[in-house]
Length: 302
Image (cartoon, rainbow, N blue to C red; front, top):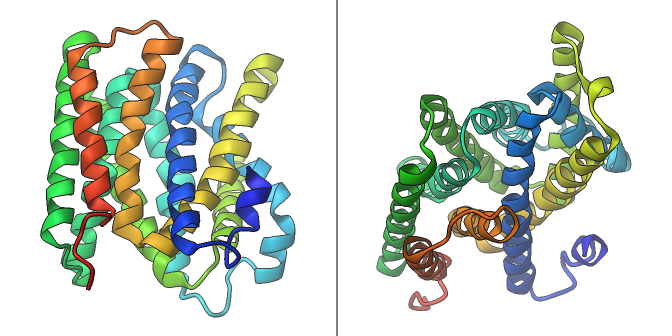
């Protein structure tokens, strides 16, 4: 999958590559929410997970960031800062801290559902984007579906104040990354490499200041985090989402993130034995329709 994706830029239909990148992203993120929540039951802290999440792709993508440099000459420094903060170290520490104290289902719902809304609002207010009626209807449907899921989840498992405060902040950070990357001129691979190496360096500093618990974790726990955080989330999902932004546009790509909480809820029902009923089914249908409308599939051609 990764090798197919890495060769897709410029060689396949751009829309196909964009939609594929968006789908891959949300599939990986659904497992990322569960894997991050799982670490609350292990000795691993957010700094440890950050070292894994960004250290693996920083190593694998070393040829890329060594070629571009840590500060590419053609990219304004402010865009690099927003990208690293929005999809890298700051975003990860904020969301991981929230997910450590928040049940996975409502946490994933609040984070994934807030992302397309934050991205659309930033696009409208700062960059003059004017979504058509179909896309606005899709955004409204996403919000409605998320409200349904969140309400059902709150009745079952509750939500911490930490989650309420930090997860929307994480969504805003990610929205900032979405718009910054789109305007950076970087390829999806270059963006993923820069975010990984800068975030890894930041986590090395954090580890030096506050220490790590990597040596206390079991091999199965480390293997799970290397796979889910380092390879899937840190490398493949970041590249896939960058591809989606490049071909679909920032707001349209971000709309797909609303599928994440639906998949996380389904995954919780299938793999964790969590309850799944009419509210979850209704929300899945509503969010799915909203994503379809938000991506412009049914919008009038101009």
